[in-house]
Image 1: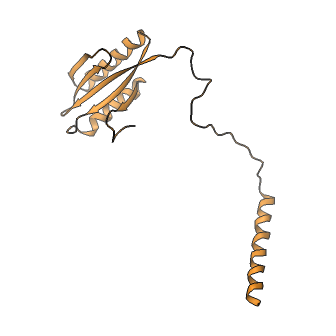
Image 2: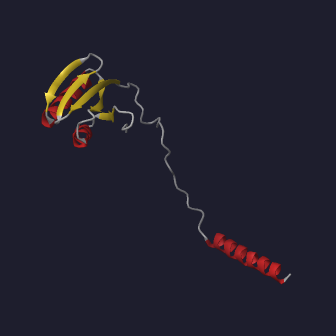
Image 3: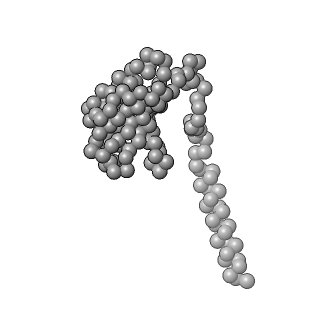
Amino acid sequence: MQRSSFLIRFIDIGLIILFGFITISDIDTYSRIDMPGSDQSTTSDDPQQMTLVTVEIAPGGVFTVVERASETVPCQGVDRDGLEECLVNVRDQLQEAGEQAVVLVEPDERSIVQHTVDVLDICDRHGILKNINASELKL
C-alpha cells in the first residue's frame, strides 16, 4: 500500500512541475515558416522553354557538348576552359531564342569525379540549371 502511494505522490509532483513550466513559458511567439513548393508570386506569365544540353565527360577530362533538341554538337573534345566558353555561348544563344539551357552531365564511368564537379561549378558560376544524368548520382 505504501509503495503505490509513493508512486502516486511522485506522479503528482511531476505533473505540478510540468504545469509550472507550461504556465511560465512564453508560448505566444509566432513564426512564419515558408513551405517548399511553387510560389505563385514568383511565376512569370511568359515561361521559358527549357532545352536540354548534354555534357559528356570522357576519361582524361575531355568534354563534348550536345544540344539534344537539334542533335548539334557545339563543342567536341574540349578541355575545362573550352567547356566553360562553350556553355556560356550555348546559354546565350538559347536565351536569345527565348529558351533556357538545362545541362545534363553524363560522366563516363572511367572519368574522375573532379571533372563532374568542374562541370557543376561552371554551371553554378554562370547560372545554368544542371543535373547529373545517371540515376544513382542525380541531384
